[in-house]
Length: 175
Image (cartoon, rainbow, N blue to C red; front, top):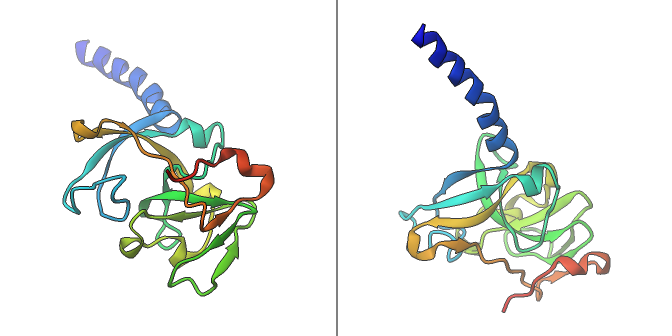
């Protein structure tokens, strides 16, 4: 009887846990060097443990320039990548190589995402603007290494991004 009771207890815990992790947030590990210095600043073999905020994206559809987000790669839907939102629909942006055009207007419903380390990042300069539907979560806090505990810095390169006036309130310039 005790085994059956444990199974029922487990079955009771699973749905709320799955709901919480898919709608509210979870803890993830971020590896790679494309987001240096914001994430993994000590090298490609360093891994940051981060708190992931799904609620802002899934429930509130809150996309902000400067936020570091996780998204499905448009090149490989099985791969989750971590990039920073540089521009949103309506914004004009000066691109970096290898993007074929010098400037691009981000279509409504899309975002332009880039790694903080442009020469180590496969980002919108390779695959263009990404649909907002590919963005799964916002990286809220670095939890480990403990010496860097705190929010991920939010910043936007206002020299390259020309923000549409109706959305200007959501930008925080690089200091």
